[in-house]
Length: 457
Ligand SMILES: Cc1ncc(COP(=O)(O)O)c(C=O)c1O
Image 1 (cartoon, protein in one colour):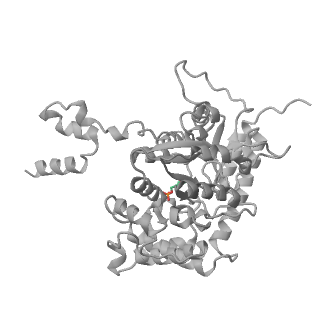
Image 2 (cartoon, rainbow, N blue to C red; image 1 turned 180 degrees about the horizontal axis):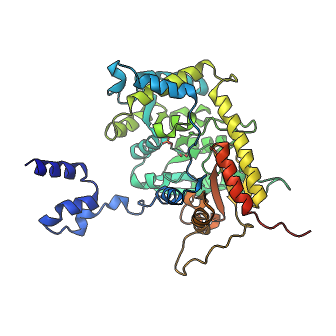
């Protein structure tokens, strides 16, 4: 009886996992193909992170692949979490408000209200999510319908495409194109630009939204105010929404400035701005994120949220609230983490650039984020030939080979492109430089041993 109940419970909990389901039910009769089908998920089941993360772990490679810092979050942020979980007061250990812990939505509204130069209501204009990832998912599920088109700028954070498709929409891609860089200088992410005419041609009567990611992962481009004004004007002209993924908003270098598209005239009403405490406070595992926008859009995100995760862990929200309160009081001052972190990361960026240049790879200098792309076109490696029937892009084969033979992990940039463009961008790989100096030096040692012979004079 007890065994039967346990089996029932396991089946119930796992009923969405078709392979497990099949093993539980197998003895009762054969299942048809129809039963195990998940038609909406066809074509979106692959995920590069699963493959590259496990390969990196298997070979214990120096990990400049996945985008997370391997240094700790600052003391005041960790202390805020420890203080929260250490409390006897039960409220911080129990469910909180579904759409965001009151203390967190209150400070997010104050903080971003100041940055956006407008009144932000904590109850109706802020939704706390399980990382920025869930905020993105809520946007697409809530606001994209069957047949809607969503414009995605390439290269893009890879989950946008499957999320649009899972909502029944159609992604429409437009690549950033490399314009000639100033002679002799390293290429900068700034040299990659949208062609305004090409962009305008992507807007049709079916366009529902455009996804803007600035600073951009994986390129590190920080869209200028002028570039954003072009996008904003097209959104207004074609009555289109903007999902603005700003998770790297504080990671901007060389005096560049991050512009919030929602602060441009007319854009608040049609923009959902997405942020991440993981990226903001170097605590990606906490998975606290948010969406900020007008109630008429956010009310639909709330419906997706309440019918999927319902709410995020209370203690993590409490800690993030405390961290933002501290940052609010010292905003713009030298002691602010939002001033210190980019300063530290810029040094790390420059160190990795030196190592890559010494080895003969050509880095593209990022204006923001904690990533940089490097060009392998002139870099020679003894890769075995691919099997004749393989259509795996060169960068993907290169990174796997590099992990296995050199003990260094990166991510192939073709993974951030649509299937039509993958082959055109398979000479680039992405490195994450949000790492301890020792990790970057270990990568530097590998690159130095591997460096290309210098051309003879
Ligand atoms: C551009 C971009 N958006 C969203 C996310 C997800 O953020 P979070 O970890 O808060 O879910 C990431 C994570 O790498 C990202 O690079």
